Length: 342
Image (cartoon, rainbow, N blue to C red):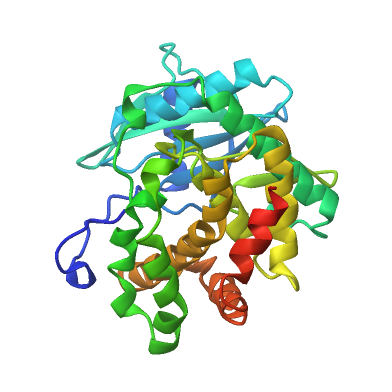
């Protein structure tokens, strides 16, 4: 989504997001997967997604990737889901539906552009962002689930996992390049977090495949418990602790006591997949960097995609949380999270 340059604030990216009409998507679904049903558009940051309800009552998600998406990245996502379904059969992960030719990824064309298309089973539940209340039990199940997933992914490999991704916390400087688009008060909120990110000792953090985007719309809740993660589009090889830091950043949104929520999730993760002392120490700088990335990229998207409200879904709560964190004494958040994982 982000094309980094020496002057990122002035760089414009080509919009390759698919915008098929519902009738076109219905035809594609019928031709590629021999499935007919009623389609409802779903929000997405970069792809085009539809909820499918067939006449028999079955439900699917039709995902149409950006025109410039590499097939190898979609193969990575499918392979990671397949790995987790084998290793963690109790986790309600989506199933990949094969096209009529037996492929897990199908090709479609609209106008002059080619798109890669996939079909997944629908998983019932409510996104964490819309689930209430966020009880200690709910947050504990989030930490446990993410810990199990990251523990399982330590035995996963794929050639495309070693890619450069703008949402990877290791490359947060690409997002920080858009800080000039923020109003002065927001720039002041992220300034210290950017400085702390620049001091992160990446070589001392364990590296591995991660989901990369356990945000509150990708975490699915059912009956008061987190049951699965959705959307593997940000899967990448990075510091393992980044997966937890990302989840914490979103679990803390709109909380009266955001650090208490973060500690609950982090302690549960640590029970399943113990963090090293350095990883525990880096949790707060990493989650703060993720929040800072979020507001920077929201500002960039507001410039480039001003009519798309979904692009701003986390901007306001992230800004509010950054303001809350600014009220903490120096190193207080870092020490509290480190203690939670002791």
